[in-house]
Image 1 (cartoon, rainbow, N blue to C red):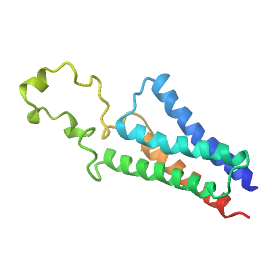
Image 2: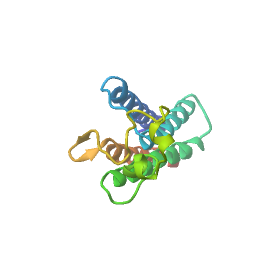
Image 3: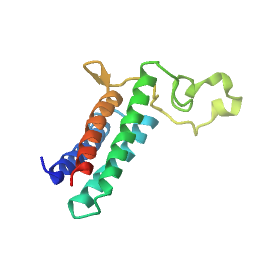
Image 4: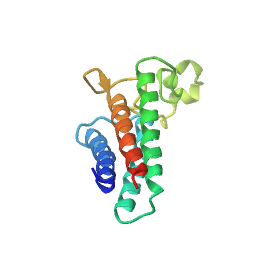
Length: 154
């Protein structure tokens, strides 16, 4: 495959994952958690980098595309580990995020609290035992390999 073909495939992969995430959110009604949103930013960066490269941007950008794909893959792997209970996640969006024991009376009665907060340690959708975060990691690591191969091509 040509360098531009690899870049196009990696760009479409990140764009497709972004569209899929928005589809799950806006069509499927599955609101994202905080870490889900973190995973979207590197995909957006990779898609933008790919678009610039396909229109003649500097070749060094392919390494930035690889870094963006690797970043979202690592966030996805971390998130999946939080979901599986391998390690703790951010206290603001995991089991302790809504800990009422640490709240005072005014916080308990506050109307400013987020309603329907999505917790990062709960799996809301899975396929073959992998959550969306897990699938994001697997696919993002494959996209990273495409980016690296494209960056190494002369």
